[in-house]
Length: 378
Image 1 (cartoon, rainbow, N blue to C red):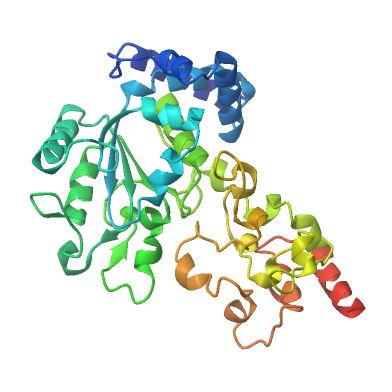
Image 2 (cartoon, one colour):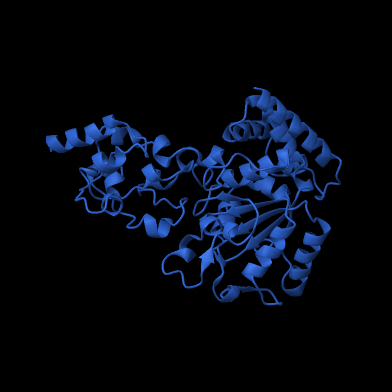
């Protein structure tokens, strides 16, 4: 409790400092909400949800609300490297305005190649001016892997033809904090798949700074906005796991909260896509689901305004928030058994005992037993 009290006081002090700064947006967040038909009640419900998402006590809800209201006082520079812009799309593509997209719209985005109107030399001048004006105070978000082969020559940006490697290292030097948005920026992603001819790497491998990694292809809007809110509220990084991912978002396996978990425990599996078991929503492990090996909050946060996520839609998790997932998790529609247990002839019926029963995955013996029981019945 003392640690929470100290964190709360730190948040209060941080927000007081931000409130003294000049707003950078012409409209207040309240004005923007009214224009979009979003009520104050909806905003308070959203702040309570984000408080819970960040694994904070409910008493922190007022701080979350205040952080959202002053989010325009924190300059944000968003760089694009080798990627598909899917992470930005995850945040901004919606058929109706949500508070997540509205909060991001309220943040003082000083540079974002996809969203800004400027281009060419004007865009580069905007970036240079933002880095100089807000030196030591801006939040740097990077989307996409950084090619490093041939001194970064495989990615050149802007009229000065700077390499992505140069742009990232320059911007990272004076950033208050750095966030890698998506698996490509975090771990190299698809671009780093073998044989990786461009030498694509995650941002943390090319800068000498601590980097927050938001794994996912793409990560959910909640994970992006939640991370921004945490930094705005406390001015520091959240608790991170061994891969520098926020524990509040990546602390549990996809398997732990999957709506199909009960079928796994009961030994009820989809055997082929489209069979009766698939129609009944059975477990997709035999169809290659990597949920037991993947850490993310996809089952609870979902995508597209909390509508769905891959497993609910009928396809197994491909482990996209894990390092080297493109190489380590393939084939995406077959279980991992033969890859992990080298030299052991494990079938899909015995892989539970060999792999899923291992303590590193922490899946109970009752699940393994159920798999065998189901096999014997067949």
